[in-house]
Image 1 (cartoon, rainbow, N blue to C red):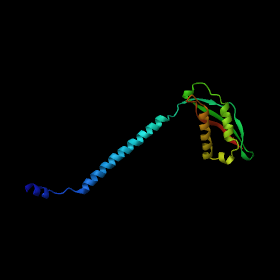
Image 2 (image 1 turned 180 degrees about the vertical axis):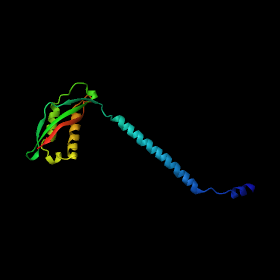
Image 3 (image 1 turned 90 degrees about the vertical axis):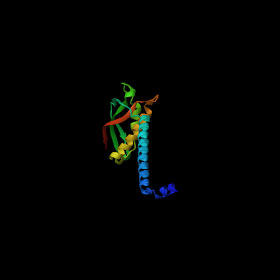
Image 4 (image 1 turned 45 degrees about the vertical axis):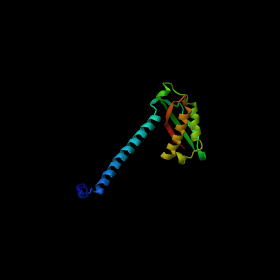
Length: 152
């Protein structure tokens, strides 16, 4: 009987303190797990799509004039930022000239007068240039720079 009285007389532990400890442990473990997940996810995304290293810049020799909508026109000069992987030789810009003409022909002056409009058109053009100038999984182009951009 002595055992029964000892057990009965022992003070009860607080459930509140136990719940706090469990909640704290879950927050620490969950936060660490989430942090590790996002850090590893970011690293794998960076590894899968590494940004190319800048190589030489090939400038277009001539500016081009493109017909815009409503009788307006755009006079445009550009240079192509090549990747380091493309080597030290300048790429042939004939396809780039054609893509620039196709990208801007028929656009309105209103589209080209805002930074957002120009950025969107440029983003689409760069994507087309990268695709066109990728040979044997080697990206030769990474950006286009406008050396002149005049609308009238």
